[in-house]
Structure formats: C-alpha cells, structure tokens
Length: 139
Image 1 (tube, one colour):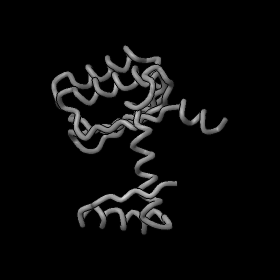
Image 2 (cartoon, helix red, strand yellow; image 1 turned 135 degrees about the vertical axis):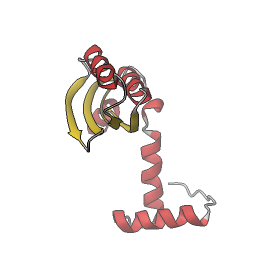
Image 3 (cartoon, rainbow, N blue to C red; image 1 turned 90 degrees about the vertical axis):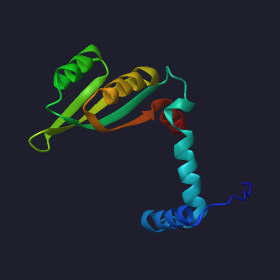
C-alpha cells in the first residue's frame, strides 16, 4: 500500500468519523478506501454492455396527468429488463415504486433515466450493480 495525504474540511472529517463509528471500521483509512471503491465501481466506469442488476426506487404524484400511463408504458416497452416491481400507496396522492431490473448497464441506465425524468416523479434513485465485477471477484 502507498500512503497518500489529503486535506479535508472539518465537516467532511466529522462525517467520516461518524461513518467509522456507525459502520465499525478500524479507522479512517478503511472507511475512505471503502468509499473510494464504491465510487470507482459506479456503472459509468464499466463497459456499457456488461450485465448488471439494479433497483430503481421513486416516489411519484399519482395525480400528475397521465403519469401512471406513461410509467406503465415505459416498463412494458422494457419488459425484458424488469424482474419485479413493488407498488406502495403512501397517501392520497403519492405512490412509491421499487423495481428490480436486470440487463446491460446501458439498457438499465437508459430506463432508469427515462423514468426519473418523467414530470411528477420525485425522489428517484437507481442503484446499479455491475455483475462483471462481482463475477470477476469470485473467480
């Protein structure tokens, strides 16, 4: 291993120290290495044709004109990517959906961007996990 010196502001160092405590790391270096690994394994650093699995979660306003229809159409157009979807009614006007997806990074990324860009979709988040890295680690 090599030693690297970095400068962090007080707020960021406090956040790292809190992460060390809550996640059980032995020290700051371990926590920072883990955060760096997670950032470097992001889908944009992988081959777009590599396989992946993903969760897409978002909250949307049920009353937004034809939004339910547009979302349903988008998922039907990409039916081969969807493994499962959970739909939850949060209140009178808001719904939450969580979809488990599987396909190439490019296809899954395109679908998640399309869904989250729809007018009326709020708080969207996609967690894309490249399978090439996982399979490579097990070999």
